[in-house]
Length: 529
Image 1: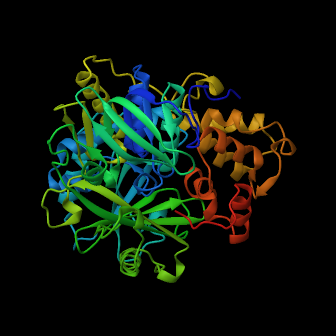
Image 2: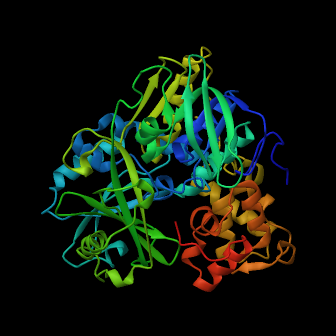
């Protein structure tokens, strides 16, 4: 396995007495920040990205894990956003068939919610707003005859089925960062930007690693991709060159929470449930033995990093799911939950569900270039990043060509293992068969987990035998994989491994999670982020 370039740091502990110079400093290691860093680096810009915690530790690992156009946004007449997201859906499916896969959604029809004609019109638009080559269109089914109706209440006789995609959101961020680094970007995790002074010709920023001395970075331009902290960064860390006001907009912080319960159905399709409050929730097959249910829309009070699900949110999700499932969902069954804060542009809407999910790129060229990223959703990250990189190029006086639309994410180009590509979903199954042939010692669950997580990069993780993988620290998790995640993917704590680079924490006992924590050098097991 080749090592990372010597000019690039894999960790936040890199120290240097001299100033670091770059073209663009990106603040924020979520999906938008890493996407912009990747795109810029691929265009030849010198890029440094800093993230105060782990990659994707907050909003970008707390999504419903869907690559989707946003069917419900049609009700709010967000046609441009839906079309843009639908166009990106198939681009992403092709770019990362290991971590993104097609998913069919079953929407039981409850006449008390929305009439059938309205749903048909919505699905017709959803099928035709953008060109669709990989995913089947919508259809209607009889739940009394279709196996997908077996887990639902008998009163539900009819459903509509449509297509979208599923994504491992935290791995999407990690692999985007891996690609950014491979193209020359420097990625510093657990490194906070404590201040950034603007001048006429550049920015001078102070970066404070979690462990180590502060360092000074000089950049020609700055990208504020701090997610829920975007407004706060402009008000407290970014200092203007003169008397200009940097924070010109406000964010509305909306908490979305999810619960995980024992599996409610055997098939691999998901459900969309309509609620009496006109909201929707999803019920999605998750990690084999579980069902993921979410999300809520609640105003976040307090610091974004403190977001946690509350009892009322848990009760709401259980109640709404129980309106549809034959087997009710009780709060006592929740085995795990997570919450994220969506940084949405404040449009003065009274209903959090109706606040736009579209993004805004705000440029400020009163002195050294500043680009602030407001809002956004995971499905449109590549397009957002492309637009941001082009905008920065113009601000720096050197427009450079986009390149990401046809590019694979790390591990996503399966051709070297299986030959010519056919379809992303069938290509992946062919890839799994080839991994099984090359590594016969892997059991089926481990095989699929690692093929999904790493794609063709699996060759840098696996050894010819289990014995060559080192100690099995926890079931199916060997020292070789932990070494790889620490060396190649910035994992420095057990949470990084168990809850973001994988979801193994959901399958392990407390004692097994403790073993991973000890291996990572932690004295006590940290709570799941």
